Length: 234
View 1 (cartoon, rainbow, N blue to C red):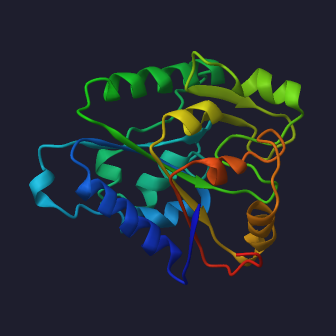
View 2: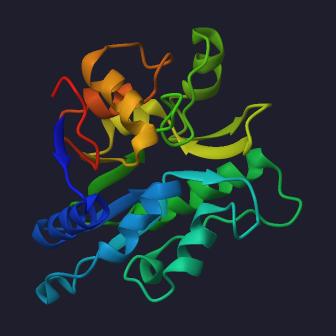
């Protein structure tokens, strides 16, 4: 895991993703994160006009099961950055009225597979933030049995996640296995002084994935983590 510390972490991360898209000889799939990681969006731009024959597809790797524009990640993105390169190439992930989480998740997965099945030499980049509790995307720390029951579904790359007690308790999220085995590169994004403690813990301590799902960021062989903090232990 390479850690890049900068007062312009969002710009640095967005510029890096833009460079990867421009340099890759083929199509690119970029799975995005919500929350503060949406600050990266305006910095992802087309950098090579010669790549017009290649496709770049964006989708949220973690979506919230809500139609509220202040909660749903894709609606927040297109509302904040309607003219961005990302918004113009985004697979919207918004539940239909009265659509249950299981059906919503299945529809997202089906759409994703349809959109990506004919891509040429695709490269998958996934952006991951980190919560104060060590969660990443919609993957939350849980007892091993519960964690396995929710996230260990080999036949599904995206699974429904419903956990009572969370402020936003219904999600559709990529599985840990998908992130580990199918994402070619991870871009971690951890900003804010409130994240310094969890960042230091992630750097200096090792835990199981079910205890701290953000371990996925550290374990992946191709990770750049962008932050505005200067954690001890680096």
